[in-house]
Amino acid sequence: MFLHSFQITIEAMLQIILLGATGFFLVKKGLLGGVCLTTLSRLVISVTLPVLMFAQISSSFSFTNFPNWWVFPFLGVALSLFGLALGKLFGVFVHGQQHKLQFSSLLGFQNSGYLPLVLVGALFSPDKAGTVLIYIFLFLLGFNVLMFSYGVHMLVHSGERKFSLASAFSPTVIATLAGLVVVLLGVNRFIPALLFKPMVILGDCTFPLALLVVGGCLAQIKLHHVDKKANAVLCFVKLIFMPALGILVVKALNLPELLGFLIVMELAMPSATTLSSIISQYQKDDLLVSQGIFISHIVSIVTIPLALSLFFILNR
Image 1 (tube, one colour):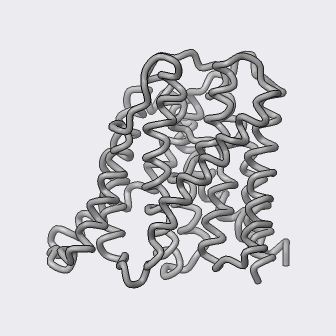
Image 2 (cartoon, one colour):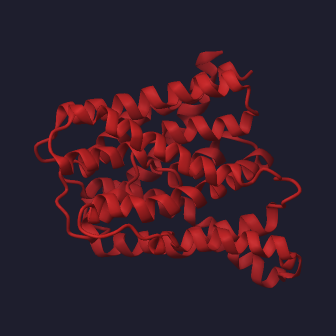
């Protein structure tokens, strides 16, 4: 039973790895430069992912079918706050204030969009995948608000300026809110196919482009003077302790399968690659972020299939 579940999840991970490896080697071989990679990243974050979110929500979401929709943005915030709290707790193993802040951000903010979106498509039937995609988009509503407001403030402006919520309204947040408003007003029923189908096609580009970006970003990371202790603690807490605790809580509360899967999957994800972009954009010293992202992604190749296999076995 375990081997069967592990085989299914490892096959899904291998599909992701192959696409990510393509981006990695394109950058290493100089066929995809840093400027092009940045452009692709902006295209995904500002165009294809928001379009995918809007199209999926406006076509598949309804307040009747998802009466507890507000739970998912709440989870997006709650799981990150849980990771940040663990960052404070396990920060005793990390020396230096900035190191501690970056360590906490690596624990608090995971690759919550790119990898889960592709993983869900590989693991579930189209009907179930569509439902989980809605869960993820709503989850990202809360996650992105926290990451692009408090997360940026913590990494970049801590001790320099006051916290502001204005930066929380990223394109993905706006697209999700727009989709919810369109459904609430019933306007989605009047979107013509001539407009909607191109949106779906453009949104579907998100999956391969996102993995090219992830692989390319990993190829650009420079691993100088790796902090072995900090990264060992990071990988243990983020990739083993957090998903294991999530599995226990989901089982104890007897949560529905797809909701439980979302929680365990998000807790099992490696650190967000966006953190490296934030550090670079604001020209802050990258003391721990890049190495934490790289190492957690490598280790997660094994830990994600293990965590999801255990989840599937316990929920049969």
